[in-house]
Amino acid sequence: NAGVTQTPKFQVLKTGQSMTLQCAQDMNHEYMSWYRQDPGMGLRLIHYSVGAGITDQGEVPNGYNVSRSTTEDFPLRLLSAAPSQTSVYFCASSTRFHGYTFGSGTRLTVV
Amino acid sequence: AQTVTQSQPEMSVQEAETVTLSCTYDTSESNYYLFWYKQPPSRQMILVIRQEAYKQQNATENRFSVNFQKAAKSFSLKISDSQLGDTAMYFCAFMKHNNAGNMLTFGGGTRLMVKP
Picture 1: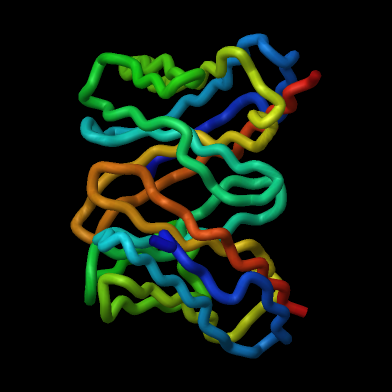
Picture 2: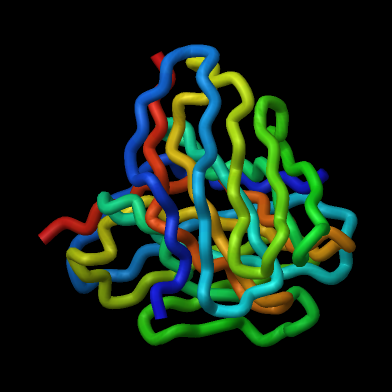
C-alpha cells in the first residue's frame, strides 16, 4: 500500500514550458486535491475533485489545469510555467469524513 | 470563504513539558471538520488529530489533545510530554464539503521547537 505517490520529486522548468505533475493513490479514496506551499506559508488549494469527471477550482487555480479520468489518478498541468509558480506542490487524497493523506511533494523551480 | 489564523509564528518548549498552539477560524458553515497537521523538516504532511464540529467532546490522540470552542471558533492543540521529535511546523486546517469534494483551508503555521 503505497498511499499517495507524486512524481517527479524535483523539477526545474524554463519560463513558458509546460509540464504535468503526476499523482496517484491506491487507497480507493474518492476525494483528491492539489496544494502549493510557498516558503514560510501554509498550503493553498489549487484544484480538487470528488471523483472521476468532477473537479473544481480552489483558491489559486490560475495557470493550472486538472482532469480526473480515474479514481486513482489526478494529474496537475502547468500550461505555461512562470517564476511565480516556483513552489512545493502537494497532492492529497481522502474519504469524505477523514483528513487528507498527503504525498511527499514536488519541488518545482521555474527559471 | 473560510479563513484560518494561527497567531503564534514560533514557539518553543522544554522537553517533557506541555505546550499549547492556538488556532482561530472564521466560517458561516455549521458542519465542518478541523485538523492539526505536522510538517517536520522532511516536509511530509502528517495528520495529528481530527475534530468533527458536531461533536462537543474534544478529540485526543495519545499526547495530543484539542480544545474545541465552537462558539468562539477556536481550536487549540495541546502537546503533553513534549519530545524532540515533535519539533516541526504545525498547521491548523478547516475542511468543508461541497458537491465537488472536500475543501481544506490551512492557517499560516506555527514553528515549534522542542529544546532538550
